[in-house]
Image 1 (tube, helix red, strand yellow):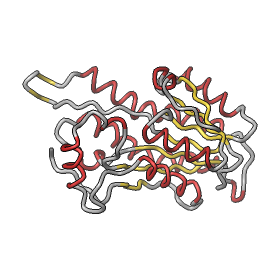
Image 2 (spheres, rainbow, N blue to C red):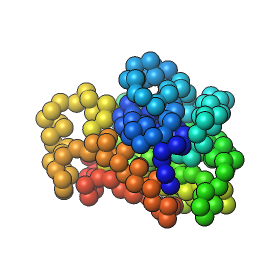
Image 3 (tube, rainbow, N blue to C red):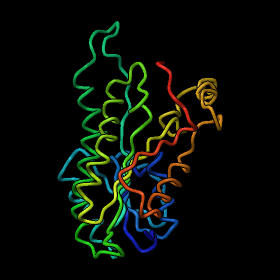
Amino acid sequence: MQIDGTAAIVTGGASGLGGATAQALAAKGASVFAFDLPAAVANAPEVAGVTYLATDVTDPEQVQASVAEASGAAAPLRIVVNCAGIGPSARILSKKGPHDLGLFRKVIEVNLIGTFNVVTLAAAAIARTEALEHGQRGVVINTASIAAFDGQIGQAAYAASKGGVVGLTLPAARDLASSGIRVVTIAPGIIDTPMLATVSEEFRAALAEGVPFPKRLGKPEEYAGLALSIIDQDYLNGEVIRLDGSLRMAPR
């Protein structure tokens, strides 16, 4: 599917994986609508072709309004990339006591329910666009994590949420096939995003050393490049792709 002349939604689009993807899509000629929280939008860089919309992905009314703005653009809405997410760490049972249920619920709400909310409302808008060759109308790319398969100590909530995104992939692709919408999930490994900005260089080096090859942290631009490749490959559907340098996480 061609990117040029289309509209695209990128959640978490103000920075990190979403920021890199929004910029990459805009560079290819897409009109990009980057959804993110108000504070992130206020600090987002100005990028030609990217419109920032303050949107909480867990709020159906906010998402519906932002999807309506994106689908009302001059170009047809055909691309959705879900990057919004959070990753707090807590053990099920620690010296502080049992895992806080509210925290677990929040992680599931943002990472899994937020993804599903955007997929559902955006798919309804994409389904109304004119069909292209072979009936295709668009593509949705969701973001899981290798934690969905190799969850570490302290990642119960995060791994469960990302495992849900993995499990959503195939049934979503099957559900949306009749509307000509593909669904593919990327499961990144350790990517050098703002979430790692607060750790020391020594810790970053240790993380990189654990990657079989290449021995470095992944780059947001590499995630964006894979997303663009998925958009281009019309026969790629219902699949989860690991982007991790063949890393398999140890328990801790």
